[in-house]
Image 1 (tube, one colour):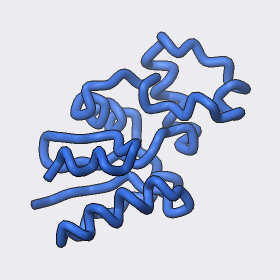
Image 2 (cartoon, one colour):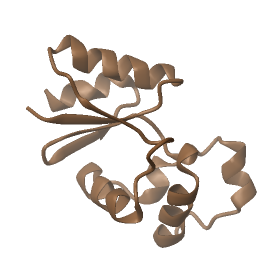
Image 3 (spheres, rainbow, N blue to C red):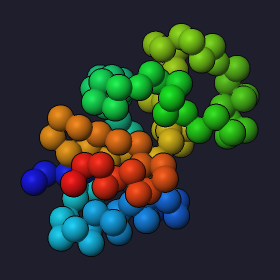
Image 4 (cartoon, one colour):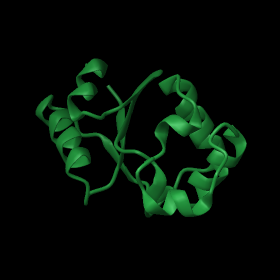
Length: 113
């Protein structure tokens, strides 16, 4: 069973989700998205799996987001902002096959097991 996590090791919620996965006996592919940001194409694929719009995976309380003055209804602009500023992406996102979850709270990862 292949599983991957878009992970920020400094985020406690992301660490909790990773721990929950590992407690299932799984060793996920860990993508530290701040070091290896997803491309626009990858983000679009993730959003399809999540069944969410780009605005739904933004860290809306982040001061950097306010500074960008984005039109949150412009999906293309939001995706481009996420490509350029991956720190604005809500985390963690966990993918298993054709399913994905935004694991906030971390227990949401259990939906994939």
